[in-house]
Each structure stands twice: as structure tokens, then as C-alpha cells.
Amino acid sequence: MTDLDDKLSFLLDDHPGENADANLDEVIADVNLQYRMRRYHMIGEVMRHVLPQAIDTSFHGNVMARIHDDNLQQNAGQPLTETPARSASILSWITLKPFAGLAVAASVAMLTVALWQPLKQESGQNDDSLVSADQQKIQQLAKQQIQGGVVTASTRVQPFGMRWKVERETPGLQQKLNAYLVTHTEYSSSMQSLIPQARVAGFDSQQ
Amino acid sequence: MGTNLLDAELVKRVQAGDTGAFDILVQKYQHKVINLVGRFVSDHAECQDIAQDSFIKAFRAIQNFRGDSQFYTWLYRIAANTAKNYLASRARKSPGYTVDVDDAQHFEGESGLKEYSNPENLLLTDEIKTTIFNAIENLPDDLKSAITLRELDGLSYEEIAEVMDCPIGTVRSRIFRARDVIDKELRPLLE
Image (tube, rainbow over all chains, first blue to last red):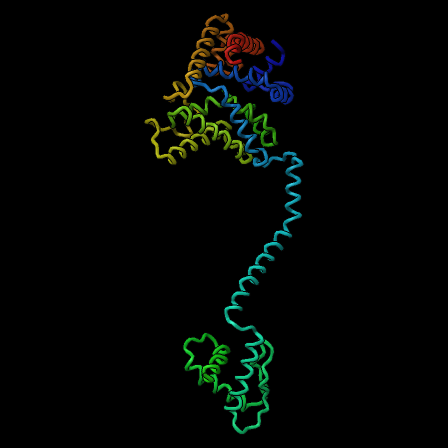
């Protein structure tokens, strides 16, 4: 019989007494005291007939093992001291996070380029050949549509995206070009927008 | 039988990150939780698993426990809900009666467990009960009265002192000595 055993009994009955924190610290730190406390609980449970018919002596150990295995201390949200491994993990994530974004962007860009190349090959022509062919067709159409007139508008095909830019200060050319587009759009049932219509319609008319 | 102060202090420590304090709470309430879950699930192994899950859920959620209710009421509610969810997920029926979570703390008496995965545990439990009852029978009358009034009748130290007409210090000593004598008989069984 020790003084602490007596305090343990007193503590068990919810009488913290003096130095309750210190006593509790000792119980938490001392496995033998915990076992004694558990036996004291068991005595009361047997007397009240509430002890299960088959107790599992490993139950408490299993619960605590699962808590430790699941690393639940960190999930409980209390201010635990972070382990070096966890700190390193957080640090590495913070460091690598911007690079992860760059890696994703680079992957998307590579995928886009990889998909774009086969599409270009399927068309059978590259951009330069398309521009060249279109330039010839436009020049021919201009000759047909603007018969005998002085053509001040440039029919030179601009670089990609600029090929249909004409000199708007020439009303005659603009009007005729518009009439040409409208006329040929009527026969372009499969076309989706005006610019491609004009180009392909010109091609169709040439055919 | 008041257990608020010790529980509140232990909960506070767990919330501050002391896992060892939760260890004591598990040891204190493990059999009560198992008994409660046993009202819902008759299989011993399943009952043990659900009880374990209940404690782990309680540990995970203990930061949310604000002390509005007593800890064991909160713990029993978690255990009852865990058992009910288990039954719902397995589409099984309870053993024929239901337990209101608010009344769960008052459940005492025979456990509802019907099946035992380990006969050794059953034998050990019987031996524990026999040993404790024999030890109580052999206690001196003053110790037997003190421990009985405390554990069986749930009287406070002040009430026991009044009943036995002795100082509270004497009550404290008698209760401890009774426990110590019984523990000396019990300890070899659990080592």
C-alpha cells in the first residue's frame, strides 16, 4: 500500500484532492498504476453486475494501437509537436507546388503540339502551300470579277490571319467581294463561317 | 456516482494532445461501451470491433467535445450511433429491443452478448467474478460496508460517512483498503 495507491482510489471516485494534476500525471506515466486503476474499475463493474460476460484483455491495447497506427494524433487537431518527417513533407510540398503547376502546363502544351501535328499531316498541305494556292485563286477571281477596272485593292495574300485584309478605301472592290461571298455562300451548305466559306467557295467555283 | 471532474480533466488533456489521457478513458469505459454495443449486436467479435470503432471515432472527434454534456453521455451516443450505422449497413436486426441513447448510461445487468469468439475470455471473466465476490465476502464488515455503499449503492464519500457515522478520511481509507485487498486476489488473474 502506497500513498499514491490511496490517491488513486480517491481519484477514481472523482475526488481529485490536492495535487490532482500531479497525481494524474503519475497515473498517465505509470502503466502499473493504470493497470491497478483498471482493476479497481473492474471490481466496481463486477459488484454492479455490468462486467461483460467475456472480457477481452487486449481490447484497450488494440484501441490504442489503432490510434497510433492511424496516426490519429495529428487528425485530432491538437497542437502536437510535428515530427521532422512531417515537417519535411510539408516543406517539400510547399517547395514543389509551383513546379507541379508548371509540369501540368508543360504536359498540356506537349499534348496540344502532339495532337496538332497529325492534323496538319492529314490535310496534306502545310500552311505555306495553302497560302500559295489561295493567293493564286484570289488573283484569278479578281481578274474574273473585276473586268476591265482599275484594281487598286491589293490582292496579295497576307500572312496567316491577314489574307482577307483588303484596302477598304476601295468601295468597288469591297462591294464586289461581298457580292461574291454572298453568291457563293448560297452553294456552301456545309460551311460554318464566312471566312472559310469564301475561301472554299472560291475553290469550288474554280472547280 | 459522479465522474465529471476526472473525465473533464482527462478530456482536457486529450484535447491538448496527451494521448495517454485517452488511454485511461478507454480503460475506464471499455466495458460499459462493450455492454452498450452488445444491446445492438449479438456477435462478440463484431461487438468488439464496433466498440473499438466507437472509441476511435470519439478520439477523432474529441476536439469538438465542448463539455456541454458529460463525456460518457457523449461517448455512449457515439457508440450507439456506430452500432446503429453498422446494423443499417449490414441490414441486420438488433437482438429484439432498442436502446435510447439518452438512457444508455443506465443500462446495467446482464450483457446481451450471445456469442463468444474466445472461450478463454469467458472462462477468465467467470474466474474474475468468482474471485472478486469471494474476496468481498472475506472482507471485514467495515470495509465490506464501505466498498458496497460506494460501488453498489453509488453513495458519495460524504453520504457514506454519514451512514457509517465516521469521518470522511476514514471512509476514504476503508474504501481504498477494501479495493487493495480485492486487488491482491484479482491481480494474479490478469497478469
